[in-house]
Image (cartoon, rainbow, N blue to C red; front, side, top):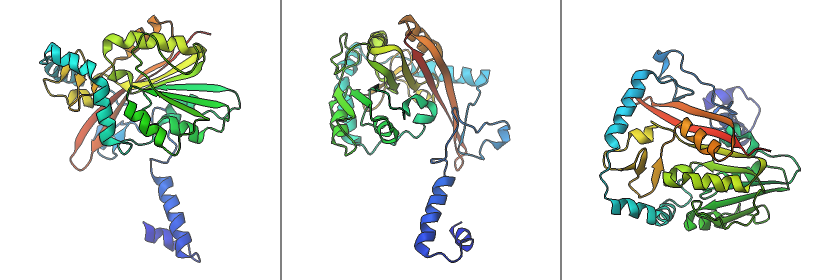
Length: 320
């Protein structure tokens, strides 16, 4: 490809040509290309399934749903003792600190899809605005927001259950206390200790965090979110959906409860339905703006493997 590219650009030195080729290659890559919301590659002919690495908005048939349910029925048998289940709860912070201690910030990639799916985070106004991310990890949502926003009056807050994650985030050269405040928080606590007032947040972000919490505590988390959002403020939610590949891959003996599992490293994960999300938020007083199952098919063309991903993406608003 590079030879063909160079042959079309006579009269330029090699360095200039190389720079242009890299730029051209980045443009062609799907990673850098602007993608429409919900994707744009749809599988209309099943014979094309291995023509690309991924397909958007893939519909499941009744047989596939039944097969997934059967796998969940098998891996949902609880073999842990009550003492084991309690240990996963009481030592949750230790498991997450160990996770970040091992992976540091090398495990994570910037979320390039962030502004496509949630354009509310790409703020280029001049109005005062406050965003709070619960479960911010090492900053892979916070830093892109700060990097691309031109709003000098934007303040971003981030909290995480893991003290190690907050430590890594604060050590990042992108961390600027004039625009960002990160702190440790157990979001399941009845009373939050946070550096801002109630009814003060324009947006609260929940991306792959509620699933890590004991389902018995979901309601309390949602109630506190409602308390700190401004009237008219938005919750942006994205998390694992029921029958996602990750759920179906769990082996028997890892279940802590219905659709709730312990990973090998001790961290936990829950898999949601749209109905559960709708009920949780509306029961706490929110109004639904969006609630959809994002079903995608990823394929390994070399091994001819099909991997179905399911995420729930939603937006809920506190009444004005």
